[in-house]
Amino acid sequence: MMPATVDYPGPIYIRLAKGHDPIVTTDDEPFVIGKAYVTREGDDALIITTGITLGIAQKAADALSARGTETAIIHVPTVKPLDRDTILTYCRKISNIVVIEEGLINGGLGSAVAELIAEANFESPKSFKRIGIPDVFPDIYGSQEDQLKYFDITADNLIASITQAQRILGKAVV
Image (cartoon, rainbow, N blue to C red; front, side, top):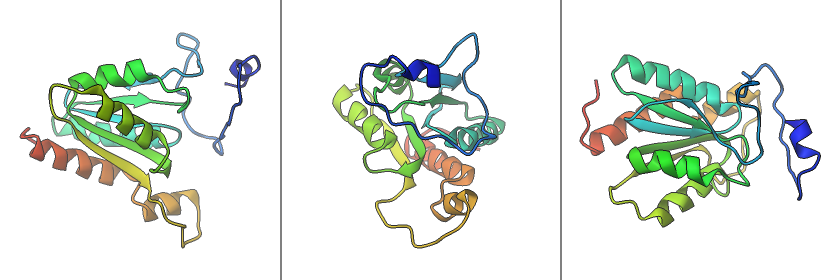
């Protein structure tokens, strides 16, 4: 990622993880600023994620697949510029959309995707949910894992959100 930032024509904010997170890009599909990466195909639900929540999304998608719900995952390493085309292509064909992020839901990836959906004027209705930190000052201390559990940024919450929306949308869920 760092070499891509050297000649970028504008300000850049980079948030690095602590490490040990899976590498999403490969030499076949290298990192590009403003590009989203489809890491899993599916037609029943769409998870849009950024940062370390990709692992949570993958865990939830595996569990949902075992129940017969095939979930697409789009990983968005750069929120601005946002890969509008990739996100809208998948939102156009999938009705159940959940954004999961480790940051605040207000003003983050979820807000950006909500704006895209609101202005897209899709012909079919969409179910949309944001999972992340609400607009509150955290009142607990602890590890990253503790914070994720406290704010319910978990695979279980993601599965429950997708399952509930599937029921509302009238699609069978096991």
